Length: 468
Image 1 (cartoon, one colour):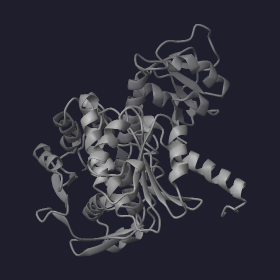
Image 2 (cartoon, helix red, strand yellow):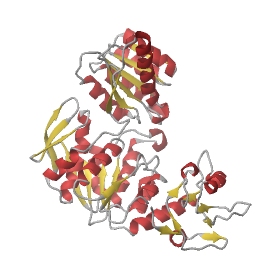
Image 3 (cartoon, helix red, strand yellow):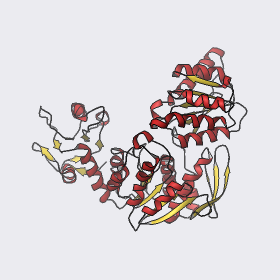
């Protein structure tokens, strides 16, 4: 419940109500998808690249919208009030900014090419051990997602962890003006969205916009092991903490122990353990420790919170499908996160074979072929048993892997999901582990559905009873 009235909407957006209405009327929630509207909600009709929210006003009204925020009033007058604004997206952002200014919560912004969501989720687990607060829901990190996240801040919240993403220069700065973070984390820089940015330097500049936005009384935690991130300190007006494994970091990891399902790190003498797959989780761990200590949590408080951390679905999360261990890393992919995934699979211990299932890394621009070639070389350097690849650049990956010595019989170039599943059906045996990863647009989560279907068919054919 937002605890907002139509008058609050008018004041925040500068909009004009079309028709007589009681401005003291309360609204329940803000929605940008008419299918999610419930009685008492306010619907913002946003214009997108593919759709225009104004086409769904009727649907929102039928579902009980108390008000619609629109750039043009519908031709047929309705009993539901229309709040007319010049730009619906800007109105949403203005409302969120007003909400943020009215809150005493400490806003912590997180950006970076890799690890944003894991760091956000882990930090929320840590801070919630002693404080009341919230984190961005799901992947709400865009021009629409950040405002919707800020509107979730409740009275009494002591912190709000807001994820900030960008696909072009200036976007982080714009989001920071809305969110007004008092602290920040920059996790990494990698060639993600390289097609939109044009260069790695442009990515560095854009991620650094968060550092420049933190006020003098705040602080920022930078990945001190990433030279590009470390260099962002020159843009800081606030206290800067470098976190990582290098000796010159102000918050330093001095020892790491990695097991199959958890990692342990010693950070400035304190020992911390978290349930997570892969050594790359050391970075979010030390960054969370740095933030938590800076705002007054003890090491015991931090560990208490870490025990509650659970990996997010699609982000290096282990699941069991019949006799196969599956590492679900399907949410997204870029060169840095792909390498981390290869490391995870290469280091996996178990009785069976290790299979890497890859979809394309999208949005990398003209250098995409070369980056996929590098991925194939790196994957083949790991102790894995085979690669099945799908997408436009599957051939680039597999040619490089073959050149590095991975056996041709263990390489599958798949033109479709059905072909990929046939390949896996030929390869898989009980005890095998399968890591699945690709960009969001490749929809690699469908491979997990295919594996469930494959196991279901095998149990039906053989009469084996599937474990509950």
